Amino acid sequence: MWDKEKIIKYLNIIAKIFLIWLLLQFFLQTFVTYRLGLNWVFWSVVWMWKEIIIIWLLWFVIYYFCKKQIFSEFWKWFILKKFVIVFLITLFVAFIISCLINKTGLGIYMVSVKYSMTGFLIFIIFFVIAWLFFWAREINLTKRYIRVIKYLLILGIFWRWIIWLTPRVLEFAWYNQYNYEGTIGISPPTTYYTQFDNGYVRNQFLFERPISRWFFLIAFWPLFFIYAIKKNPRWDGVLRWSLYGLAVLSTFSRAAWLAWIIQTLILIFLQFGRRFRKTALYSFLPFIILLLIVTRFGRSQIISREFSNTWHLRSVLEAVQKIWERPIRWQGAGSAWPASYQINEKWKAYNPENQYLQIWMEYGIFGFVGWIYLYFYLHSIGYRSYINEREHKNKIIKKVRFYWIIIFAFSLWLLWLSIEWLVLHSFVDRMIVYPFMALFGISYGIYLKSLNK
Image 1 (cartoon, rainbow, N blue to C red):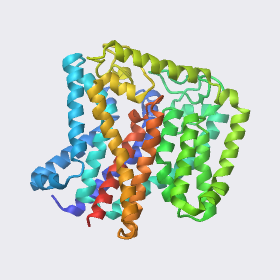
Image 2: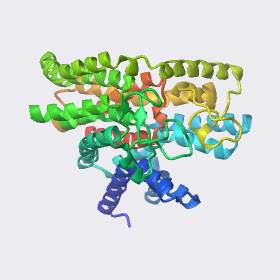
Image 3: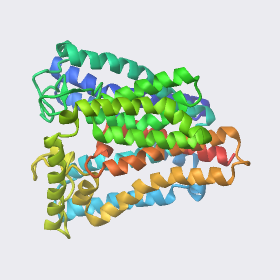
Image 4: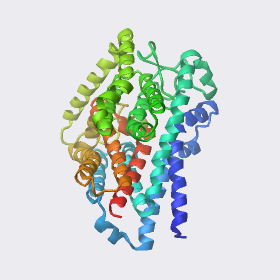
């Protein structure tokens, strides 16, 4: 039963299913729900397959520790002790504030935690699994995921072509060209626009909205850069670079453009060093020129988006006011996006358009402090690995040095995510956060395991 090779084989399969099917969930759920009309309770359970896998993996790890009686030994060296302790305390504080003080109910609390805290749990579970069962070859899970993204970039071009010229083609999957962004409970629109119901067509390929599409692209760009561009022949790398840049461009998101540009400059500087200027000039400058041209001729649709510009600011100010209305008890779980849209028993659906204020509003200052600690702990992992590599450059073998680059790539996205969260809330987007945190946990576990070899 405990044949390690079989366990590794099965865990690999489960991890691949978890990573790949997350990409297809929204498309398949749209087809089944609106085309086939299958939206009864059974299918609600089916669409929770990813949470079921997470719970099963957690059970498996706990059962393995109990069966092998190795938890005490494991806990002694476990580097994520503080992370796990703060995670559990934050869950407990959120429970007290939500269920005992604000009387929001256990069901609402669990829905809220699913969106706001599950990412941290995934990181812990996959880190432990990587340390116990995976070795260097399992880092290929990240490499394989990047290979999938290569194909998605090409397919995204065709999707962009369809929604621009013949959006009715997508009605076979029960998308609707007459529905608009933000409408809940009906089939999703075939096209999204820069001005809500008019303007330039934005690409959301396989995702719920253009914003989810660019969250995904920005999240995995550092990894894609390392795996698919840096070590490939020049023109092959430029082609992939161009495809990725066009994918980011086609979302028509100003935040995505800015984040992608700064990410790329940092990556070029770290990876090419003395060749920074030359690489930036020949590989990156053409995209900047294209971006400036598009912005110049499409200023009214890209920059002067009054609805988007005023909506974010107004929502943030309103959220601050809501927090100070109840400075001690706060609002409780389910009082803000996205849980408020799932269970609408006590409050109306509300989106503060700010990730930090959402957590503060739901869990109070103490829950917020715990959540912030967990989030910035993930930042520190990448920067600590970078410092460690600089200090022990001559002592670390080449393959292990490559792992620290992978870890740094994960932290680099989180850095720009933390800035974007001032007006956005991508950490609740499961199609991005779940695979990202799973790969982050696996990569970090293998990195530390390789250092201690």
